[in-house]
Image 1 (cartoon, rainbow, N blue to C red):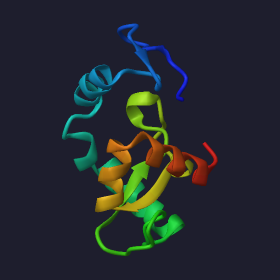
Image 2 (image 1 turned 90 degrees about the horizontal axis):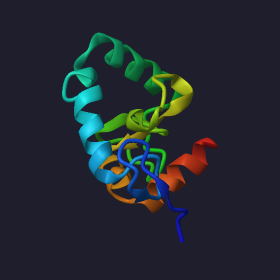
Image 3 (image 1 turned 120 degrees about the vertical axis):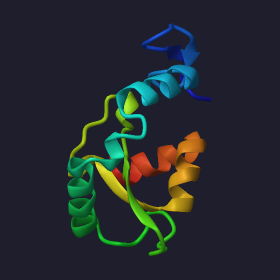
Length: 111
């Protein structure tokens, strides 16, 4: 059973640092659709691909592979190469939706 702790923003009990509602709201405020279209993110994503390869860390697919923050930006994760893994679009989407899969990604990278 996940450990419950108060959300950093609203105080509701959650297994993460922020509840789902606050994570979603913070996500829109911190980067919305704009951050991932910046030259900074494009450069960092290219560097992550060069360092970590072009295959999905979870399933090994090389189709539509993209950089993923191991510790999410909404949880205080940094925009650094050691906080990125490569995931195919399908695994990326599932990782954001499934806390247990997110935990697997974190354990792979040692976070």
